Image (cartoon, rainbow, N blue to C red):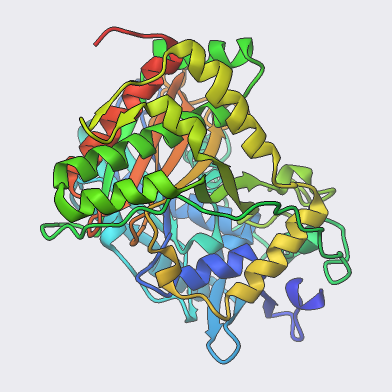
Length: 509
């Protein structure tokens, strides 16, 4: 366990090994930056008179905020080293010896863009080295509309260094610091920072933070009672592409989001279960519809896989484990917390439930979708049961972390070459206390109009990152452009919207 807790022999450089999912996600990144994450917040900065702050003011305030954030949450300044001989990762933190060290770190991690980037996929084309002691995390500042003080702030890097929820926690801290500096509520005095004391906030790996002895947690009993036959349809390569990733940002308006929340309350379920159910049936229907368009042998192979499969399979569903830890459960803890606190586990459901829902006719290639009542009486209970199946206590989490650590030695990207869905619920951001002072409609001159999540995917999987902000439910649909054409992504968005409307009983179309 000691290897996964930060220590130093000289008081200058601290190090620990990465463990479990954080290590595996970094190993994913060895292969074309697989699953690298970008969490973004658009911010509008204005003074007391509601006049946009100048670019120079923004630049100086952001630099100060970034340095202040390093002192408060030093994990943003970790370096990483990969040891290929045993597929292990080491995280390093260097205590700054003076302003020159800080200037070097800022120069390598704070990225300024001169022009607006309109394409959401642009960030996902960028990659950088992070295996030989480089800083893996970057803070990217991009102009949106300088005349009104609008900029996009993004945390980006290998997924093992931070997770989606933490990206918003960090951005919330930065926006608060920017606001305080502009209104001189709490100016940043960089000269008064005492470097070295921040090392107390370098957190251990998640398995250690559970409080369990990670080496003595017993193996869980096997619960597999039947043969696993998942629906794994074939893929067709998309020959025409301009970016690595194709993305659709799907926003459900206030009324639709409120309607889904009300339905969830009435049926005693969660937004996560409802959205995973909507995503599941929409994904199954889209695969069949896309195969029908391609036709020929591809359609026949897809139908054969669909007909013979027993299970719907999501290889990766995610849960934030940080709130369950006895200590170091948040950045406000005296010992800080890890920036990656995600637990990942597969979900396995009965495909027959979704077959009945989509009502696909192999002969006519048409769909006879179930109605709202069937959705809530059949699909939702089944998805709730599916979510409840994986154990999520500390012992089960530590066991999964051990499994993921072992996978690092044998991971091959070909394992991700399946046309399966991946889902991750980031959460209700205002409910988590994030951007509450700066959400649209607040009285503050500083505003955060929108947030975004993006991930670099390279296989045929369809990834859905979803969250609630400003009374709207957002979905970031992400797929590798090599395996998903723009028209296929359009069909996925259309079908997702269709099933959302079925769930809330909206028949207007």
